[in-house]
Length: 307
Image (cartoon, rainbow, N blue to C red):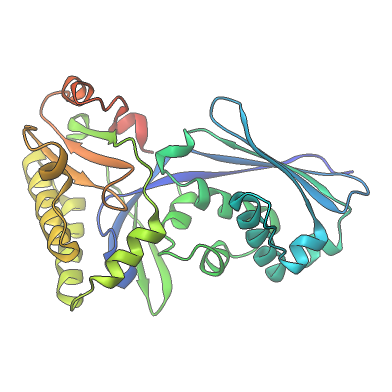
């Protein structure tokens, strides 16, 4: 019997280029201080994986026994939760990339542990995929493409400890490490909007609204470059506002500030799928009181959230 193996992957936030990253935009992404562990132990003569998922509070939120044969055949169980079937699909795709993990084993006990609340949208899926890829020594971008899809920027963040520019070129991910450590970071905050947004649904809506995207991609590329180089809070805030206007026009949707916080004295930018998860807030003064008064209780400083 082998010793336990532990793997860890970072969560993520996409600061620029949401949606347009799918069409080749250069996008600024930053790994979070929060992430997920995967702990694997071989067990004797079970021919299955005993899977247990534990949340930030230490509560088991998912527990299943999954047979090797179900993984090989990619079984879908009508009476099972979607989570079980999704996990079987992920493990099946991993098996196709690395069949030896079943062929050479008697069974596994697997435990996942999140260091952030599941509903935060910081990458519970991407950190899981990346950890499984580390365990089985397979390409996480390929596993992501064969399961959840999406741009893969979250997979890139899972593996690095600093900011990146992420871009898809010729259907391949390009990851460029950058130094993004703004001198004005004490004026940057992240506020959770109390609703988890489905990335798949959001991407589908974006695809349905597509016009001629190329000019917008060029505009976002310029904004991303200027944001990384920005020296003042005012310059940074102005660039975020321009970004919001571009996405608002593409998606034909009002910005989150217009929609929820029209009286806020500062700039608010959507991150990732519009309408859910976290927003980036630029404020000269600590905005906690304002957001709590609007019943948004989760406000994190830049340094609490990001690497």
